[in-house]
Amino acid sequence: MPTATAKHDVERLLEQLPDTSTLEDIQYHLYVLEKVQRGRADIADGRSLTAEQARARLARWLPR
Image 1 (spheres, helix red, strand yellow):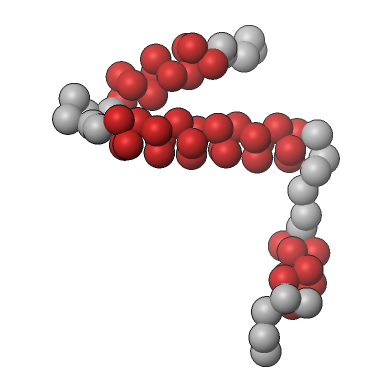
Image 2: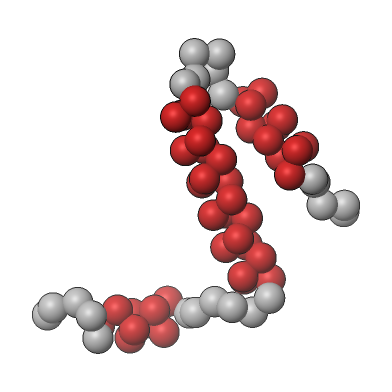
């Protein structure tokens, strides 16, 4: 399955947003889209943690 271009991703995003969306709304949705894509790429490349590994890391920072 071919990957979409950034332009195509933005076009799809804009089609889904209401016509009343502000520039701030659009920026926020672009930000979230980029973060989701980066997260998926990290997972595909093996850069992720199990839930237990994440808990162990967070336990060092969070008060009990």
